[in-house]
Length: 367
Ligand SMILES: Cc1cc2nc3c(=O)[nH]c(=O)nc-3n(C[C@H](O)[C@H](O)[C@H](O)COP(=O)(O)OP(=O)(O)OC[C@H]3O[C@@H](n4cnc5c(N)ncnc54)[C@H](O)[C@@H]3O)c2cc1C
View (tube, rainbow, N blue to C red):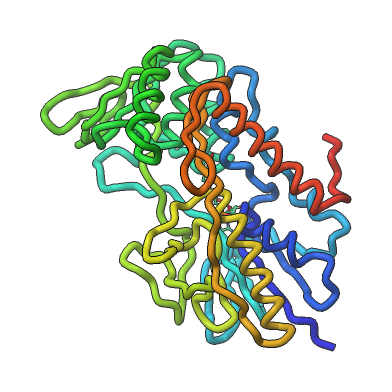
């Protein structure tokens, strides 16, 4: 009997959540396609920049996780989705046929057209990016590190780097952390300044030169190391037979479906709930991946779709350093700051690892 083949493109938060629902079921054949040999714990990556930290501690090899699960794996990237032919084209040029496809390839760094930016700045989105930045900083102290972008990633990174380097956050908006309310952002601003982080709000970078930034209005700032955390873009996947929005994201229905038998989950697309955009996050990706996998199983079983995707916010937590944080928890947005916020963030990381351990009990944990 032909077992439906489900191809999961991307083994991040969404992809592994889908696989956690699907593996162990005899009725389907699962293939994970990912160019990376490891699952990357991306929200933990800023802590890898800490003195004595390591990027490797924040990655989990797929071979260990998927051991004895029956899930097959291809180390390659999906470059093109041919939805009508039910086929994906890989980086290697190989083609893979699917019965069902889940594209959860995350996102890429968005590079705005600022002259010199791409040439001089380090991105910070993946474990490879974190390793490149760590290698650049290795063996140095007291460098001038300028972080462009004062959102969650920029602030977490600045907080970690401030113990070893001079750090400046340059932010285009009038304050850091647009993801949280003004009171929490003020607290974060105060903590950052106490740690010696300089903050330049309402600063628009016009041009980047070697070791020098030029702003609108004529101001300039010097740097030894420049990091760009200013935004994300859709993954590098070409779509045939799928509608794209103005930013290049595939347009999905309320079940995450973009074409017959083709689904998306995680950062790969923009989720809307009652007309509002739901911010991309690891928790949303995890929920979406599991939802899409259950939807596919239901459709294979009896053709029924079930109710549409209705994500549940659990909150947002930003680490300011190893012992302080800010954020909010629960749907109604209970504000938390200081030690409790940082402790909760640590708990969220541990719970995720625990869920992976529970879903993949045969995973090897030896180094
Ligand atoms: C520094 C930083 C800190 C963050 N902190 C938080 C936080 O505290 N809380 C939170 O909720 N969110 C946080 N986020 C956001 C969160 O990491 C993302 O929303 C989440 O990782 C999205 O999950 P995903 O599965 O869509 O993509 P990812 O986790 O990025 O996984 C994508 C996977 O797809 C693979 N891939 C890429 N291209 C292809 C391709 N063409 N074909 C096949 N596979 C491909 C990649 O190798 C990767 O394994 C943070 C992000 C960053 C950058």
